[in-house]
Length: 305
Image 1 (cartoon, one colour):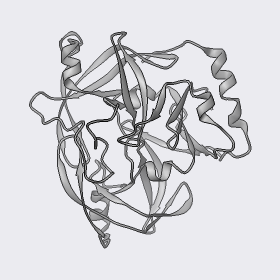
Image 2 (image 1 turned 90 degrees about the horizontal axis):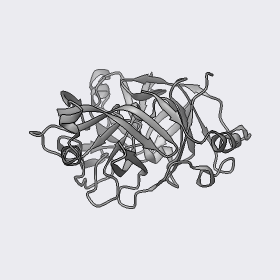
Image 3 (image 1 turned 120 degrees about the vertical axis):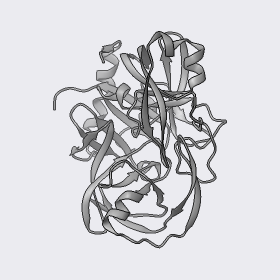
Image 4 (image 1 turned 45 degrees about the vertical axis):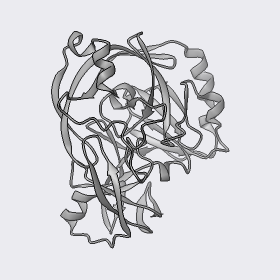
């Protein structure tokens, strides 16, 4: 995917505050199937966890618990709506872990089923709200900044805000010079965009761009999807080309905008502005800076580390 730069001078000025003293060192991350993995320790076991800006709340991986035979005492159960299935899942409170090299206690920790049984946690908005985070996709590294070192509201170069219903960060994008769309910024999504199938069908994109069948995993189950590549997607000042777009298959129940009774599911509300997800295949060439609390993002093409 090619990235076209539109306003270089503004970016160079905008990124200068990141040299402020209240900034962590860069730490390594891994990109696995479009997901950001960071080192964590849970129950004395060193491993990796997924950073997921598309989830309000953090969660523990069911498959990891089973593999390691870890028995946590559940506080209760909650309804979690994934892409393909809603399900009652346990949740836990006051759970210790080490994240970003720092001992942490999760006030609330849900449970989801991730693809790998070695992935420990899904790190969501409850933790990400604490600081500004910067993800350098090409160089596979990340760092965080305190808000007194950077005001992202003044330098954001992508239309973005907090969705009032989901309380997640959403950004405005333009699809193929045909459609403006507000989408959730989701570092847990491998596709460039997830959109409603009805929009893709209305625009004729499924046939025109030769959509193919695939499988994908949601929070609770796998399901059938279709994928195609959209010629152009504009994100603020940038244009990406041949971006991977996913939609649910015609025979697949579409829970993209279904409600969950408890935070923790990506797609929990039907009434907010978000009408899709913005993920890795659209963000992979950039340094993404995100302030989850104020709902602002900044993109910059990454330079060699």
